[in-house]
Amino acid sequence: MKKILFTLTAILLFTACDLLNPPADDPNVLGGDPNLEITKPGYVSYTYLTIDGNELPSGRMTVESNTDGVVVYKIKSSLVGYPDSAKIAVLLSDKYLDGKGNIVMDFKFKITTEGIQDYFRRDRPWTLVKFNDGVGTEYPFTTDNGTKQVRKITEKTGKDEWPMGLWLIKTTKIEQDLPESDKTAKKVIYRANHKYGLVYVEMLLKNGQTMKLDIMP
Image (cartoon, rainbow, N blue to C red):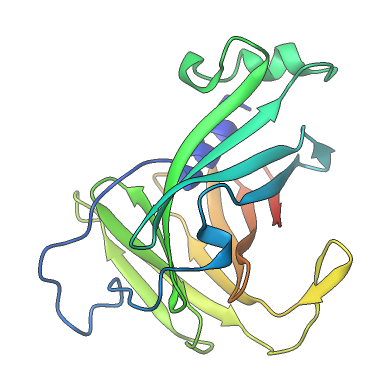
């Protein structure tokens, strides 16, 4: 469980800054308008995490700031009154606990009308999706130690068929195989929407379990 939560944190946490003078055709260059409703400071989304079918407490994901599309989020989830709160608390670093029974985490994305990038690989952004790209589009990335990773669009039907609360929305499905060196998970699946941004993350764990995170406005 500790490794699972650490890996989730690796997906949703860390900060970085843009590469200097990247080539124009670099897939990790993201343009577009950064002034979106979902990235306005104070905007709140809700997170719902399940691990192998077991639901954890829901959380609030609030936009703390937006600097040219680089958005700082804060997730807060209360463990007060949750039956397994003590078990969850001992698995988290103290820096993610506020001493009042809450999990608190900060992380960054860049979100514009063109697409989404994350800042999970230290000092460089990695494109998660560009909304106009089609099935088969790849977003490669090479880590500082030379490990090559790829995210790939594997589904884009153009139909309102992904459930988000009471609605059905269009999504783009992106898949990422994790390196063999990852001891916790083997694949991450994302779904993104041009209006609501990242709406779903699924992680296939090496122990056979599945972790799912739904993000709703």
